[in-house]
Length: 402
Ligand SMILES: *Cc1c(COP(=O)(O)O)cnc(C)c1O
Image 1 (cartoon, protein in one colour):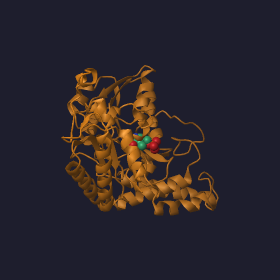
Image 2 (image 1 turned 90 degrees about the horizontal axis):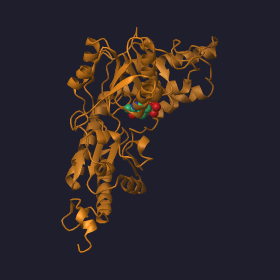
Image 3 (image 1 turned 90 degrees about the vertical axis):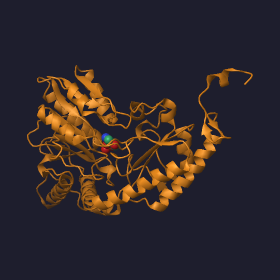
């Protein structure tokens, strides 16, 4: 099996698993208790916090553990919206955010907030001028993701942070796809709130963190026993947090090595697909792109068929984003790039992981070449004689003499 869907989730690393095991067994203490068992659990949680903080250049006290990226996004956006509603009810975000941000913003719109969704250019990047133009007196929050989960495009967050700071507006960044893959520095980018998820960086599912800059106030979503510096109640997911901490530690130590390796694999995959498969086009920006993201659209291809045939060959990829692959709705991210529905349905995301190799790349390119050619042979939109796509000519379907 070749797994190339690491943006949907990533396998738990062996070291991460081993670090978690004691906390699922003998070290089962509640970190809020004061006897040794509890103190051990507390110490493990605090060590994990240090590793997560270091990965994004934050202070340990600025890291709060949550149940994952979705909760962190909700906590940041709803937390700021509720806390600052007297100051204003306007939020700026982008059209290509993860659903955890978009649905949260839409919810707030039903409660009297106004949201501006910034468009992106054909490569998936926002314009800083659009951002400046969108700012109003009553803008309380800018939420712009670092790297997009579908097309891997990296936003100019240092510039976004500068604009936010100059205008006295809080800046939340969904960095779930970028943390551990490329350098993320909350100080350099003037980030006030940042979302991270463990299972996207080879840690366990159901755990993540939110960075809250010292001094930033939030309304709380979860009330209770006052864990996590009273910001996020609930007995800590100790084994999950320990695993997340280990994953963060490894990501930090191996960052440069992983960037070099994944960039080589990504570039090889892009080059070989472009060379071998006719009418294959890269979605997203070629330069400002995560080292592990490849997203192509293939003319005259239907993505679902592509995924199923690749799956039959033991290769896992994604059409659209994992969250929307259950429905046949065209990906809103690809649509924001200005692509037609037919082009979107013919798109494939391959997100590489540190387990992948150059041999995997060759196997995948061979399989893809074969599968795409096979599907095209049966496609009414493909000209098998000339090996090129056909212009959609309505008359062909309606003229009985044709
Ligand atoms: C996966 C993902 C999330 C959600 O994180 P979970 O931990 O799965 O809840 C949020 N934002 C982005 C960009 C993601 O890729």
